[in-house]
Image (cartoon, rainbow, N blue to C red):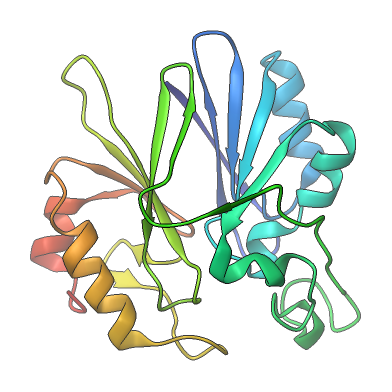
Length: 216
């Protein structure tokens, strides 16, 4: 599994593009800058199959519409708890401003696949397991990728876990107690060398967060 990283949108979201041995791809959190994402996909001659949003906030779904229009067979996936945010500007917060301008209203195409705890997305050697980590949003998830050849596992943590911090819980539907509980029970129990690719900011590891994250 090859991992490409793009920092996109006005809030610098980590968009991750995973490619398998057949150049099929999974796109995680295309939050904006659709042209840059498309340029990478075409430059690498990738065939995108799945688009996964770790949650439904506007800064993480901003390029969904453009990608779906260009690749109509692309399956948009999101946890069932956040599926309404794709098409509802109040639930994805774009109607409240803050992502581009106060006049920017964001509507993604609806979900093709709704996810839940324990679901697995498989594409060749790409194998992602859904960990439901509510708290930043009701349907927030992390995606655990099991690695081969003794390489570390990887975790795409969305806005649930950052280096030295956790996601905001003061938005509608947020709950810090739920977020901390789910991270302690489902994420800190992973292998310590697991590499964490967050929704914002630099990568980290589970071992580092166990020792250094003041929220956990």
